[in-house]
Amino acid sequence: MTQEQFQNKFESWFALVTNFLKEHDQKYNQIRPIKKNEGKRYIKIVVGTSAWAFIDKENGDILKPASWAAPAKHARGNIFDDHNGMRYLTPYGPSYLR
Image 1 (cartoon, rainbow, N blue to C red):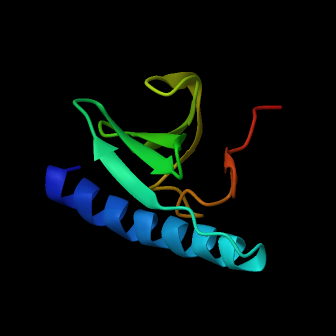
Image 2: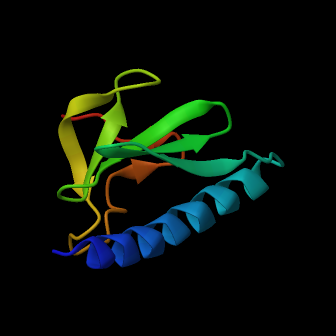
C-alpha cells in the first residue's frame, strides 16, 4: 500500500464518518465540529472537544481512544475492510470489544 492509496482511502472513509456524524447530530439538533489531526503514526479524529478515534497510518486500523493523546491497544476495524471501517462505529466512537 502506497501513501497515496492510504490517503485516498482515508479521505473517503473520513467523508463517510463525517456524513454519519452529521446525520446523528441533526436528529438531536446539535452541531459538533469534526476535524482530523495528523501525527507521526496516527491520525486523531476529534469530534467536538473529544478524541473520537485514531487511525493507524501504517495499516488503516481504527482504534478507540484510551485518552486524549493515545489510542487503546486493539483495533476496532480497518478502513480497508469490506464495510469500509464503518461496521463497529457509533456516534460516540468505535465500539468496545466484547
